[in-house]
Image 1 (spheres, rainbow, N blue to C red):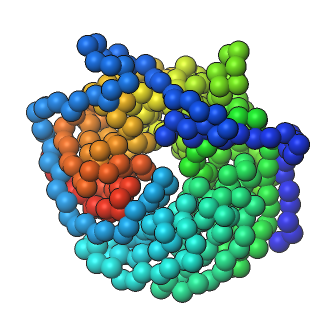
Image 2: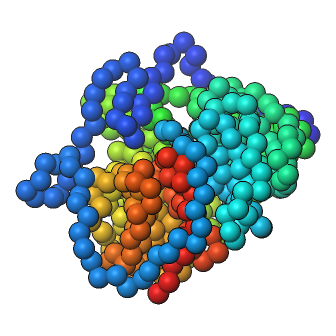
Length: 396
């Protein structure tokens, strides 16, 4: 396959780029603390909500637990395949665990500090590094290939139809051959002077790669050739200062057969027709974690930790739960009758899909759950910052 290159606007190499990491409220080149509004009366506005008792109508049980080592500041995701779970830690180890029991089948040292992963598919297990390393292993843990990307890999590589899609910290998205890691295409666009550093990667649905960018842009890219299908604006930067004008999409877009939706930090949530990128609806919202789409509803965690449900066709509000305000709530996952999120103290919270009320809670190892819970055999798979990997069952 011949390499093709698709561009947005040209990259201004002479313009310095500062990177903001809002998850820990640090700004490269400056020193500031991000404050977010809280509606809790009688408490300091920056205090996380205290957990309160509630009537449990579901039960969580740990089916198995395995310690794989810490993730550091990285949002590392486990990957679930037919009969295995793959996971990684920040120091560079990749694991294969038995799906039903959590028994360790093998452990491999990648040789570099892992910041993005785990991606799995087409017989490959993929992890990326802080210095742009990208390694592919086979399902037995044997190295298949290793390539050097242009910048740090902060998200899990995705695999579909013989193409590995990798996003790097400099805003580039590359399509690589599953067979040998050779680059087939490259998409790149201009980067604003100030951006939010995020672990957002790409979503792939029906042969299209969806990715959100700094400045609130959403792009649909052909999986096979990297050609731009359409580009639309989720949000427009607004405000008088560089900080106020940040309106980056820092989470994964979600899509089904009809529409694709994305949400921006300090911006809006918007849904588009998948064929042409025509705007279906939008509403103001700020989120740096993102959402999940299930059937007719969107479930989103906003920047304050409020979990909301919306009608996917209109954006109308179905319910909101603000009991986890400022608890650094993860991206939600929805399965069956439930919506699940993690928080900064390692609690897994389960809400009712019908009305958003809390129905169950489980404490893991006390360290933060940075990545969204992953569905596993009718329950959830959760990886904590300190390296706890938990398979959790849900019973009514």
